[in-house]
Length: 249
Image (cartoon, rainbow, N blue to C red; front, top):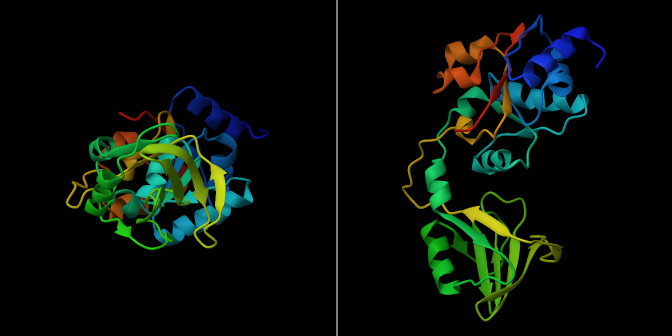
């Protein structure tokens, strides 16, 4: 890291202190995020267009950012599967299912464990999953003899559960286009969201432990809704950025 300014920001954040960068224009914020901001990191910008531009800027500096769209990215960010998440502030403050609901409805399956298929089918239907002949999209499941195909809403690929009676023999991801098996899984975990479940959380509730939040653009704060926990999100303007280390509570 050749720049003294980047070294100063990196050192401050490593010590758990907020840091500012003056005169941040163009794609400079992306360089700072790539070179000085610890992972995991959440970059908040003013608008959806700015978020898409940020994705491209960050890629130019060697990062693999993910655009926040819904619960899927929030859950993956919280679990550590995403290192750099980009969101526009209005979307980040949108309503998501509460962490309590997600924890209380979480299902977990592993080879050697038991699965009550009739019970699971009812649970999935009550959570608005659709039973189909073949699984192709998130929110679908299918049952064929001792095989259950399931596409959790927060997963990238559907999962095939092979049963021997009520015992799980194997878990494998599969290609929804060809239906061919891909990789073996040691465990499948996902949450069901019952109809009418409270949506009282925002993306800020899904921050991983020791996450760093970078805000870019005061217009996002002045014209949009204020964060419910402003001390966690920090402040920034177009010419200065205020990344703040976070701990999930």
